[in-house]
Length: 285
Image (cartoon, rainbow, N blue to C red; front, side):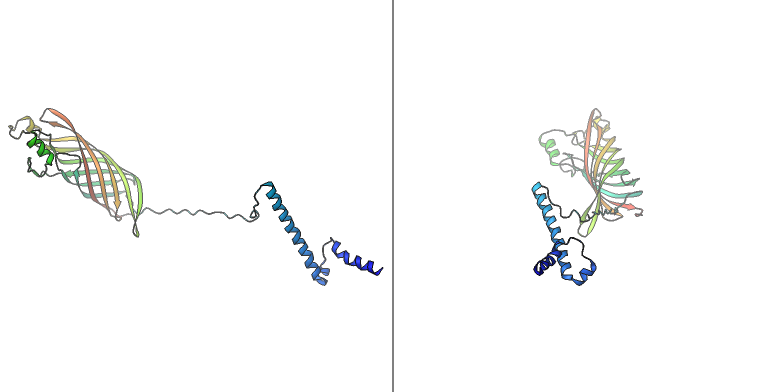
């Protein structure tokens, strides 16, 4: 009888499924710890079982599903423009040359004046002067070797017309603005296009036309000096060195119709490459 009672007493705690009371936990802490350990083992078994089921089904196990998701924050920064043209004037000298004349060297001195109504649009005026360095012939600094060869060796009279002056009024459009890192500083630039109308003064070379011996009322003399309505198209780039100073490099095409020896009409096109230093005023606000 005694052995049966001891076996029942020892088996009773293992079969208890009721929650452990606080008094019992105080009196027998070692039994409470074993009960908690059994609960943890059951949870581990459940998690292992769920992972095993997920592997069998082919679905990935997301162990971070219960973790709080972190929101990604995008911080946008807008850098201010370091160079502004709005409501400012731009003036400066220019120097250039005619790039597509096969017969003559034409060097041009001039100036530009712009009013920037907005950051994109500006009204532009340009004037230019090309000095005449000689009076024709192979010793003329304006003549290129081709002109001398045609006249002296081939007895051909090329139609040589010197551009002597030019003026135009047009619209400038600057749609592209950018910045370039130069060492430790940032250099601002823009790319622009121009279109406008103007006038061009020319002077025919009578020696090249073999008309220098004609009387003053001859056909070549009557149309030696002319002024032509001109269309102007071009574009370039402006680089700001500071808030008040910039440099420009531009190419423009000037097209007009010229009369040769009072009888023949010819369409002429001068492609001018020029650079200038621009000064802006008033200062940026």
